[in-house]
Length: 79
Image 1: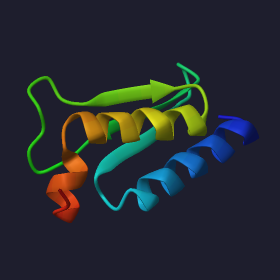
Image 2 (image 1 turned 30 degrees about the vertical axis):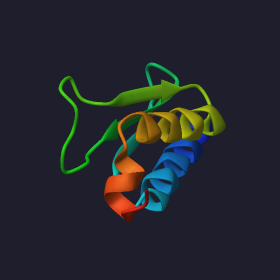
Image 3 (image 1 turned 135 degrees about the horizontal axis):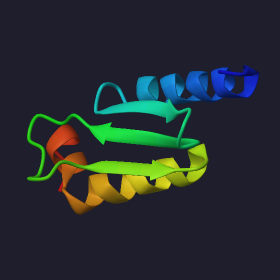
């Protein structure tokens, strides 16, 4: 792992921290992509996994999947 990989790993840790346990996020050294796995109390069949080469698209995909599966309504109780 080089310095850039270490930086990306720290970014993945920060994203996971920001999502407060709703996602497991890591940097794939081999794939050169960020990966996020939903770890919600009720996960849709087949799971929810997203990946992206950069943090911003990863956030966008995570938010999209959260809305798609009504995770935010469940988590925050909003209609």
